[in-house]
Length: 407
Picture 1 (cartoon, rainbow, N blue to C red):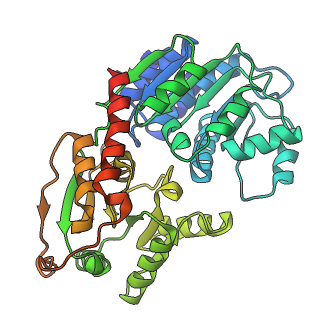
Picture 2: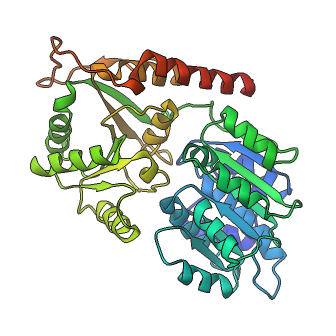
């Protein structure tokens, strides 16, 4: 199938050809006709499957046909993080270069007055994070009453980050007659509850099996003592001359600690988390993309929405407390048909967390030892409260409730 079979305009088709995009991905093939039909949509697809273009292309086509002389907000794309907001805005701008539509991005951590000034100049499409959007609504910097399309991108992450209050406040300021598109990497009980508030008789698309990982990602689990994890990472990077490695930690303090240990071992590394200013985060990310930094040590929240071309390696320094985050993490590599490697560093403290990941994936992730880094089986690793059996049972119960509703 080609893009021309999806009823896209000649202007968009020419642009896609110029960019070298010849065939749509499965999510694009399934979603674009639904969106062009005007129906609400609830869609699930893995990161890196062309999801952004799946809603951006038909959205631009729809809005360009109803464009008025006055630039008023016709579409709102709501995303969970600043990084994803910038990424989506870049895509909207590139694809919409010949449409005459004006777009802007608003997020926290930068001047709200400068953003308000751009909004006052008139825009058609706003890409926003929930908190900063609500700030502008309360200030009167913008009105959403002319909105025709609402897009929720990575809705599951928005809920994970605790944005439900902001979402409810935003929904009160939207027109009831609109098209709503909800995209989520995973479907859960909370997502289904949200969809009932947002959507009216939606089409449902699930490109991949729920909670699945890309076949292009090789998953390796190395058993190692927790205090030797930084040494093992340094060894892998230096021995194999890895150029870009994204390392995940659960906490900002741990990210800083890992970074210091890697730098001490001679590996160019920088931390990437919410305590950094927006300017610092953009500089760190640019250094990583340009190859000035080999290892980027990030928390889950900060890394959400990162779009790094040719990222071949992801390392789980710690297994996440939320099993679904494992899927989000390793989805950073093996994108758009490319291969990738996801390495998880496993210590005895992680036993229950690994079980949760395996339960979610419905497959085993066999552990192996790396020569020279074999774990000391006489050591007793302390088990934290969040790794306890009680905590595991609670998380398993939540997953079971979500799975029951899904069926």
